[in-house]
Image (cartoon, rainbow, N blue to C red; front, side, top):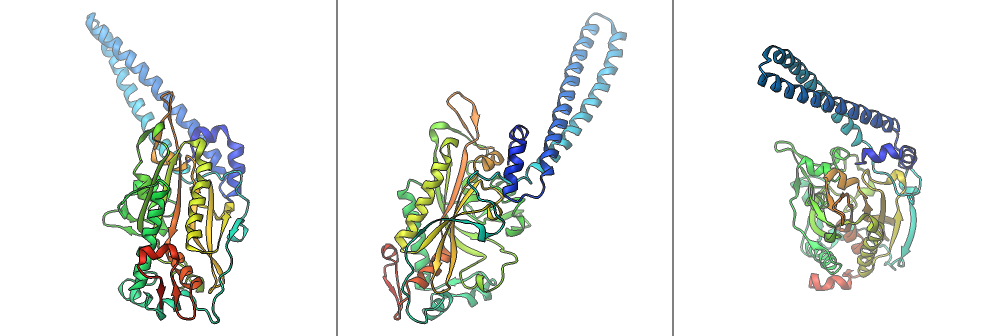
Length: 423
């Protein structure tokens, strides 16, 4: 959430940067400034009236002590009127503050100056490519056929138990999942991340804190009886560990990672491009989260991007890095890099990670601060990234490592699988 003071002082810049995200409600900026003017004026009037009422009350006491009861009673009647007026102003202030808050939470985060303009994923900027296309056998199969052929994943069984988008991993398919999770966690630990095991259900305050609510409410599974939400990513509970927390500057950076299942409704997702593991309602992911000094966040973003790239390099997968354009960025992000791997059997790129810098957008919503050296509380920057999301990684491994006799296992996973070939 943007700070009102920043909006007031940088109106033209904010409008210009919001246009990069194709934000179509620029009038909100003026409405926010106007409401903030109203808030300040109402608050000032209430404070002045309260101060006057207190002074009159003090005067009433002095008159009573001096035996001037009649004069005291006259002033006492005035204080009752003041209290009614003050109550009215406080109620008016509460309404203005609520309306101001409702408009503030609609404003997305401002994109970084390096974010390219654009409206569709096709306008994202490819900034790096790595690796060569695998040499696949003739008649190479897509992963859903390989999964069936080698009895690794049963999509129909998942439909029977729950519905489409909830696959059942079997035998070596399940072991590959567990191997990938353990490999990603082990690499995160080497990179200095502390592992957290967190709840898979969160309350509204947590969803609001990281920006999923109210923006992505329709994409989250809700447990209505308890008003809880199944997490769409470990980012939500891990970052919310620090909600309403004041850190010490020397505690920065905070580095956490966590493995969780993730749940997304993915409403409106149909067609061949979502077949098999390409898009699921439940999937596994290892997430990395950092809370850092504002001066260091873009340096840290590059480090996080390199960490994700190192995982893809160790897995031997061809990949590319994209800088997302304004129209394809998330509501909360200031700058996002997507990492995509190439599926040779499907002949298409598959997104496997997003690494984002949210600057102060999340920390302001979370009321997360750190105490600077001069004792002032400051909003830190928050970042997160997938390191990595499993479904499309597994899909790419199955497709890109297939041979005429079976599927090779990437060398880095063998210590975690206990086998080097699926056949």
